[in-house]
Every structure is written in C-alpha cells, then in structure tokens.
Amino acid sequence: MNNLGYFFKEARRITQTNVLSNIFTFLGTILILFLLATVVTGWSITSRLVQMLEEEAEISAFFSEDLDENEALRLADSIGKLDGVLNARVVDESEAYDQMEEILANDAGILELFDENPFNAYIEIRIQPQQIDSVLKQVEGFGQIDHVRDNRDVLERINHIVEGLNILGYLVIAAVGITTVVIISHMIRQGIYDNRDQIKTLRLLGASRMFIGFPFICVGLLITLAAGIIASFAVSLLINSGYRLMGGAIPFIPLPVKNELVLGVVIVIMGVSAILGIVGSLFGLSSIKDH
Image (tube, rainbow, N blue to C red; front, top):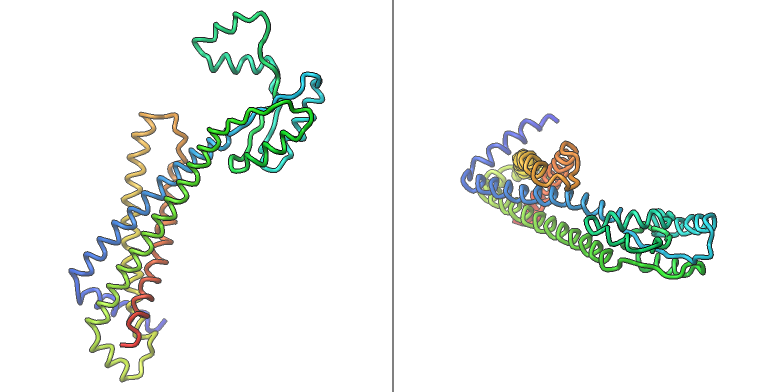
C-alpha cells in the first residue's frame, strides 16, 4: 500500500513517454470493446427472441378416438413428465376449430362448408427444440398415440439459429480477446523498451521483478478500463436510440428491459476490460522477461 502512489505515478510517466502510440492504442481498444459491446447487445436481444420462439416450439400428438376425456388428460399428464417436454395439454375439438379459424382469418368462412367439426382433439406438447428426436421417440412409444405432427422444419430452424448465434458470439469474443491482448502487450513491450535504462538501474538497486513490472500492469489495466467506460457509454447511447426507433417502428419485437440490458452489457464490458488489461500486460511482461 505504501508503494501504491509510486506505482500510479510511474504508470502516468510510462504513458507519457510515447504519447502518440499510446493514444492510438487507447482509441483502438475503445473501438474493439465497442464492437464487443454491440455484439453482446445484439446477442442479448436475439437470445430473447430465440427464447420466445423456443417457448412456442411444439408438436401435436393425435390420440385414439376411443379415449375418453379423463384418459386423454392422464395421457397428457404422462407425456408432460417426459424429459425434454416443457408441458403438455389436451386441445379438444372445439378449441382446435377455433385455432384454425384464427389462422385462416379472412378465409375462415370455408369452415362453414363442413356440416360437422372436421378437427380432432389432440395433445399440444411444448418441447425443448434440441431434444426433438428423443421426445418424438418417447411420444410415439405410447400405444394410445396414433400419429405425431412434429413441425420438424420449424424446430430445426430454431435450433440452427441458436447454434449460429452461439458460434458467432464465441468467435467475436475470441477475436476481441486476442486482438486486445496483442495490442496491450505490444504497448507494454514498447513501454519497457522506452524505459530500459531506468529498469536497469532499478535492477542494480535490487528491485524485484514484480516491483518493476507492476506499473506496466497498471498502465494496461487503466487503459482497458478507461476504454471500457467509454465503450459502455457509447453503447448505452446506442441502445437508448435503438429502443426509441424499434419501439415505434416494430413494437412486436420482444425486447429485453432496457435498463437490465444496459446494466448487463456494461458489466460484461467492464469485466472483460479488466481481464484483458491484466492478461495483456502480463503477456507483454513475460515476453521480454529475459532481456
């Protein structure tokens, strides 16, 4: 604690030895972290949309007409307990008719051509899209089930969306992490080179490697934290503007709560900034430890 003032004083002096290079490093770090912030924001919004789609993912199981209402309810209860099934309920003939009437909208008049309700009761099963194959196999294993309408194309598309978003997010995080570590480590190496005479003097005086290197760690950490603060502020403005535009133009999109989204993005960016600042600084120090 007694040396803390010295460390920060040295950190400030180190940043002033090559001002232009450090400014470009700072600006580059801001842009990289801002890119990460926008990706995290988009990831959060699309994850909310995908979650909504997953909650609507369902298959329809048509059971034997010989089953009475109580037997159908017991069958639905058994299906609802299967692994990968979120819930299951019986949709009777009347509700099935109403659902089709709602789907057909202006063309619903065609249903009046039928003398009797043409729709059968079925069990509506909401599932986890990733487990569609195992759920189908289990549901089809019930003797009372005649056939299953699986909506496989829709469910597989939802699955592909989830996988694609995850891959994209991981790639961007990896790219941002590697780029930031390289930039910060290069800046640290340059700072050590610019201060090599003073470092030699400190070594002759018996200073430890940690004592000599800690100001450089402070430099890397402070630069990434400052860049993270600016990137967080910029993306907060972007989110506020985006919510105003999207809320009026396309109100049906299920956006996350704005304040929760901003807080989540800021926490991620500041946490990543701190980690990358420390890792980049340590990498820069370790790469020249023998010189």
